[in-house]
Image (cartoon, rainbow, N blue to C red; front, side):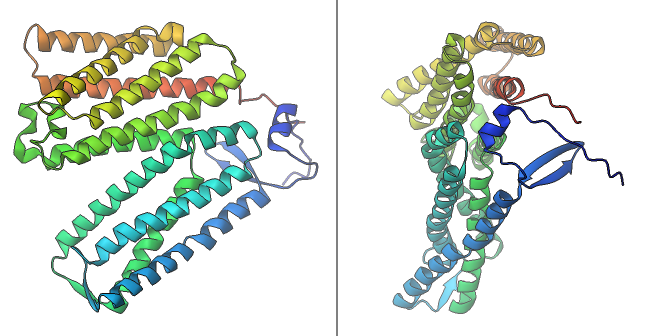
Length: 387
């Protein structure tokens, strides 16, 4: 191995932002042809934090579980149903999981040396807290529904029930701590996509026997659908995550591009689109006044997206030509499908909505990716030389 020392001259902005010190030690990680530097102390702190804290709330929740079982004289507990292991994990796991998320997130934000990132993290915190609380409730409820379906009428003694409770609760706490440590633009985007697609698909499967496709997508959130609240909650949750993602992207970007009116308009349109998406879930397409409100909000979402597509050339600074061409192609396909539905009658309403949903979601992700590229590639990427 060569003994020749190599030096990398870091820009002053990097040294100032990260509060680097002379002779400071780092871990250097090689991955996929690139290298990453991590402060040794910071990485150990994160590792110790997750290992030290995910069992503590599990033990505290287990004590509450034991106390309730003894008070109710439940010495043989079912896996699912009322007064069961599942109900205890869903309730106490939600509480301990969100407590773990909250504590870890707050500690990470306070340790953040960059004041702008701290500000951004605090701004998105309420939306993320609500979003992850709903996601956790969805996942635990769905998981135990499946487990109870597989192991019907199974019961356990109190000791075994406590062991299972601690196991499930510890997994929940660990995952919530991991989520709090992983908050980033890409992570929030992934959560947004999984929530949107996963929630809609689950609603479709749940209502397959109701022949929902003979109506429209909005039927999944009406009184005529099974578990309509899940579909509506998915839209509200996706809207919250979208709002958090827009904030997470634009706060640092507008700090380096102050007074850029195009960015302000772009941010407002994206935020209004996110609010409209949540509003569609908050006001389901039921009969009466709700139907009118639902239609107005849905139309508003369509108009906001069309304005974004048509005006991306002016709204997004330095927009790549490929993105502009893709936007116009997707917009053209949407117009063609609309004509096939409204004028020619070739497509059904459901087919038109599914095509429009897929194309619009894909375009939104492309737009968010280009906003991310605008900041991190243009203002957070530096050219350095090895000497």
